[in-house]
Length: 121
Image (cartoon, rainbow, N blue to C red; front, side, top):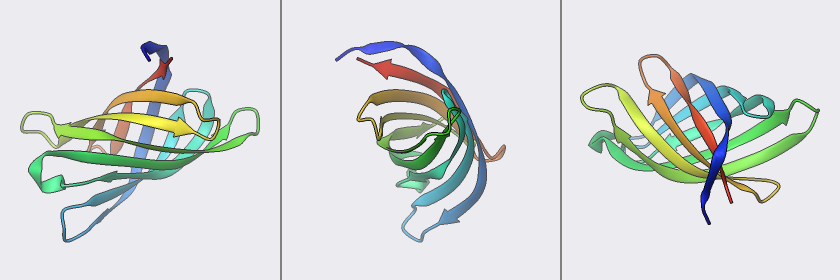
């Protein structure tokens, strides 16, 4: 499989955070992604205190054409220098069984998560 062309972008607002004692942080998100009018979901960052770790993404996307689809994915993140921002990369699978790659920035202080979606052939 090869990384395909850029499909578009995504831009989410982080509406709330939930932290667990074991260093896991859940961020509830809402916003827009390429081909979808609205997307709501949760991004989970594991091992938060170390500045890098695993990521899990679960969301429901509402299409411009009235469709609805579930998405789920996994990936990793790492802190950008000494900032409260993280580079997050993931592999996301939709209900249609297609895979896409995401590469974005998770900004804690700005309450935002945005980036680019790529096809995966």
